[in-house]
Structure formats: structure tokens, C-alpha cells
Length: 209
Image (tube, rainbow, N blue to C red; front, top):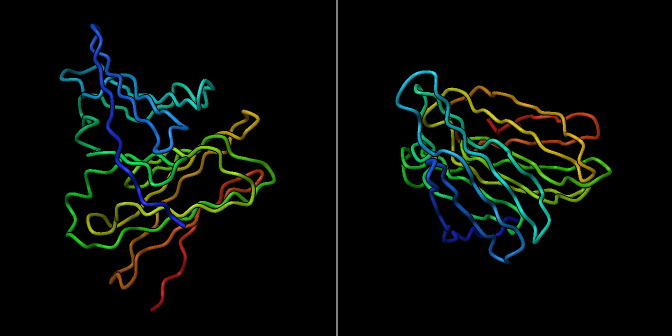
């Protein structure tokens, strides 16, 4: 069951080199997410700005240098792509898509179920749909329900991308998929991320006619 999200105040700083550092603490204080890098998009060609995540669990570093945003001079700045953050659960950090401001109020969110069907724990998982999620410590056999900003009101396809690491530090196979939007929408689209020992399977749950 999805825990109600709590928006936490973020501590922000900018060093002399122009690098931004923004810190978010989980509701129970277990996890800290730091976003470090450049939130802006460069104004001239041949430059690139990157924002990366460092995640701490107490004094233990879960992940470091994970790319959460990239921009060259054609791309949107981080704060144009995302309009806020929250913690839908103690171990789930979300960056809220700016698309949420372009959809009609009351539009049903997309539903994404993450299933760990491997016989080992997941240390870190990145899920990118319209919103972006960083998920930590997902035990074997567990399921996690995510409600994410709907993609179908503004696009003909819904996209999902998944990557991460197992508890022993080895890499979970990266997976991505796009799903054609079938109109009319009579129920929120539902997607499943099925994480198996050697692969990740992405599929859409058939909707009623």
C-alpha cells in the first residue's frame, strides 16, 4: 500500500564553481538524497551540465554519482523538467514531473507496480516514467505501488526506464520500453516492472474494453 507522500524541506547550496548541492531527508530520517552538479542548461554549444545523486543511509553510502539529469544547450534545465519532490514511502524518493502542471486537475495518474521476483534484495533502483524515482532496499518478494504523473494526456506513448543494483553491488540489467496509448482512456494505465534474477520485464496490464 502506498504511503502518503511527505514533501520535505530541502537544504540547498551553491559553491564557487557554480555547482549546486540540494539535500533531501526521508520522513523517518533513514535516508538522505543529495543532488550535486548543475541544475541549469548551458547557454552555449559544446557544454554539458549534469546533476547526480548521492544517497546515504546513516553513514553508509548506497549510491554515488547516479545521473538524474543531463542537459546540453538544446535541453531543458532541471527545474524546468521537475517541479518538486516528495517521499511516497520511507524508501522511495520522487522527482515530480513538470507535466503534472500541464494536465487537467483530477486526471488519473499512471499506476506502476515494481515487483522484486528475484531471490535477493535490491539495494538501489531508478525508475523513470513521467516522474523519476529513486528506490532503496527492496526486499526479495516485495511489491511496491507507484502513482506517477500521467503521460497519456500529452503524448501518444508512455515510456518507462529501469536500472539499479543488487544488494551485493552487482548491476541489475537496464530495461526500457514504450507503450502506445490506446484511446479512449477509461481507466488509469497500469504498468508492471517485473525484476527477475537475470532480466527485467516491463509490460502493461490489459485494460477493460
